[in-house]
Length: 403
Image (cartoon, rainbow, N blue to C red):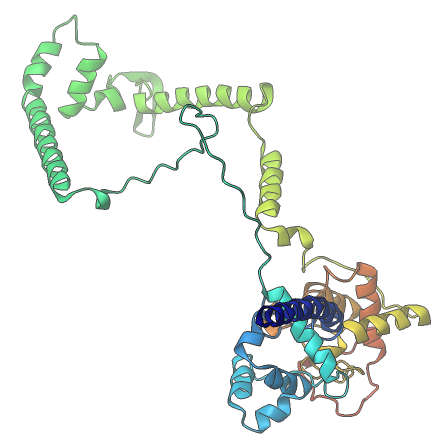
């Protein structure tokens, strides 16, 4: 009888777990839709955007606290909640948008389920181990060779190396001193007519202070008809160092011509620049997404359908930070004449497209097309002067928007 009871309990638990997991997965699916509509503007699960990254938030805070904070964070901060005040001060004292009238507790729980599902790392399938026979070397993975470091060597070995290096230094010093002591003897040896013009003879003469090899020999022969105002010109050859450098430039010019213009094995300046730009775009993908300093010549859209499309995009993506009517909440008021980054349609377009990360404004170029960005920029300019209720105080400089 006891065994039968245990079996029944086990079956009941397995059944409950089976039913709970699909329910939890379904909640996460609903939560993703709610998150994308209301939270994705300011939050990400894995990265900090305007607000903090939400990964493992269910482990740091209980569900009741999260629900209350999402509904009305300002109320919790005003009540002196320690955790709420800590979050508020950590992220620049910017209040989180209140969702008390727009999201139900069920919606918030679904978002928590979604964040919980995204926070858990995906399961990694175990790779079955294969036995390798001793005679088969083809399946063996190469073993990484550890980097050589003097710190890993025994103390006695280090002492021995230092001693050998010291002895080598002494030997080299003795050889150099001996060589310079023997220079007079070598000089007499190479002064013989048969060896006087050899390269070694010139090197020895240079080491003894004779710079004739570099500056040449002055002939002190006056050139006829080359004396003017007491200035006399001698018939001396160019200094050897100057001639050697001239010969080197000729060789360099020939090699350069063959390398870059005949064989084509080298890249000219333009090709090298293009290659570096391409390499930079691979190392920094953000550079291929456009340039915030690009010149644009857009004009604000006037057609009602386009402005309605811009309004729909604004409510879906921008209202969380700027309010449903553009009155400003976390972000600035968009209905007055004051602008932080320019008030014409091109300035607004660039602000929306590329964002201002230092101010918490995210870039929308990955989520919105260029047409959508132009539509929402035109809609923002169209609501200037509407004076909605509870509008945020002006920020920035007063600029007359070019509609």
